[in-house]
Image (tube, rainbow, N blue to C red; front, side, top):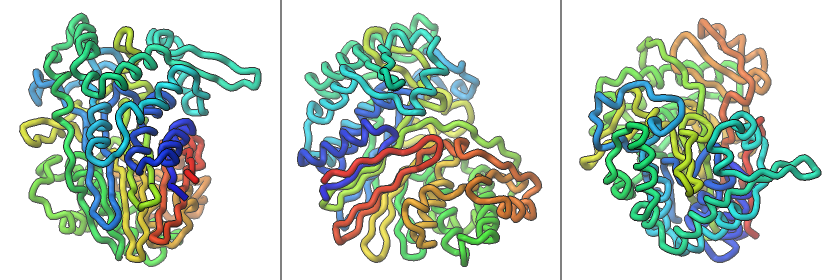
Length: 497
């Protein structure tokens, strides 16, 4: 087998698998699938979106991370950023960096040209894509908005399927394939976006657009050895990875994670981890923090803060692996709401993000003279002692680190099959008084056990866990297995034979 790709749409997964069949490696495949996702999953991500982290691990080497999280406008002070932004429109958008992040990944790890990875996305935008259930629901909710008519051409088939084309986006992708990804930042797109911002009274500097690729870094992924499993995730401080490491550690220490009492015990640990995360005196500054020590302290935390649990999480996650064992995991987004900022750069088909919502509270990280917003997108790669490598991730706002840690722990420590671990019922809590759980998957008995430890037990339907969680498993024997979420928002996969 040549490899496999998982994604948030079947069209994107198929394009990634085709890249593998054409001789590409895992990064060629995941960048191809990511650009296709910008077309086929437009409610969750796009060229006007932001990242985002792409973890890449070559065989027998530590993982590296291409990080391209949201950056605030250079013209605004940290204090000025901390305000409430409108739900949609130019004022809620920052300069997009998806193109810069994907281009850096391709240059560093890939073998294909930008033109080659762009070709499937151009075809999908110019011909048609079948809307999956999530995309169809998003279209239905936002059909009356002005940007919809400018971006999409819809067609209902006799079988009741909804097809959509994006002619303007196809032309933008074609021009960028011809000129290279640098054109996105040096050409007319930035000027057109700046004109919209200026007319709306938004003071984003015109220089911020061409400077955006400078905010992309390739760094070593933080890692922690947990019961023989080496877990690698997104950078500390810029993501929720510290919580992922801690929850996975707690799960590994529970004698039987599959039991009712084991799950209730883990829920208490999850609450302690998040309480410690929110009470850090240094805020989001993890510089100088020893990860192993932070995990141990978090599991002993007795902090009691009242927290408003995040209830949104619209992102796209992809995994890819090739026959040589290179494996990759990518999470990126349009923002906290479907279609991000819900406006389009005129004549381009590029829907802009809702990234300014990242800056409504203190939490900016200063790094190499630049500022970054903190996200809980946490793509993860884990290595086991017997030569197995696993890539996984999901949408879900602050539930992302918890969901990934649960799936990883069930598979690696609980020995559950990968698909069962991905689909198993989930628990999440960020404070000592309230816990949320999937009763239809975990059962009422788990709810009763939780009620003995928490004052409030919230029973949730599976669509509130903001799937899809997807995973790929590669063994040193060369065997490859993929698993996708089977919740209301499913995942999609394609194998390359």
